[in-house]
Amino acid sequence: MSLEEIGNALGIPFVPEKKEEANIVKVDVPKEDKTESDFHEVRKNLRNLIATGEEAIEGILKVAQEGDSPRAYEVAATLIKTVSEINKDIIDIHQRMKAMEQTKVVQHNTTNNSIFVGSTSDLQDLINSARSRKKALTEIKIEEKNGE
Image (cartoon, rainbow, N blue to C red; front, top):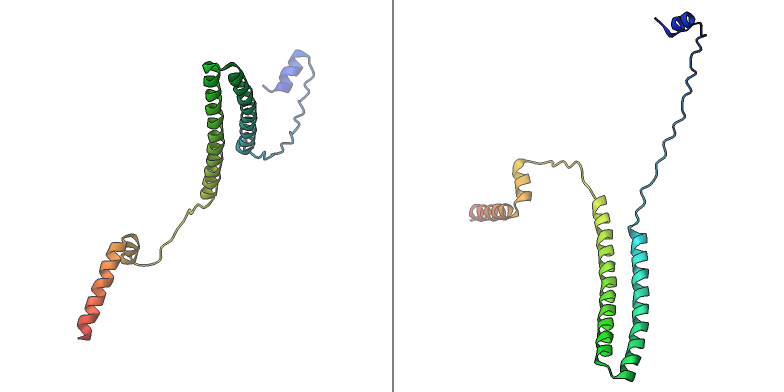
């Protein structure tokens, strides 16, 4: 039984649905590589921490000199150590970023299909350089014997 016959039996006029075709547009959205922006943000934050640490060091050194408190000098030493570690972190971030950029370049140089034209012996000579040197020495000895 069709939908039209069912509609007539129920006394309801059958109106077929209008199917509208959706206009699908494929949009290629480039994947954002947030590595570089994160690098700059982390670098900026670390530089701000260094600046704040330097101000704190100056202040604690003044307090330490005025009060002659060993604890104040201990805090100053800890702050100085922390600021120097942050400086090392900045260098580490630069090295990591440089390494990531180098790996990106390496990944683009991919050889999918390689064809070797030559004999099996030639291929083995390429793969095993010791064999090719031994073969060359043997050929030289044979030429020397033939030349005598």
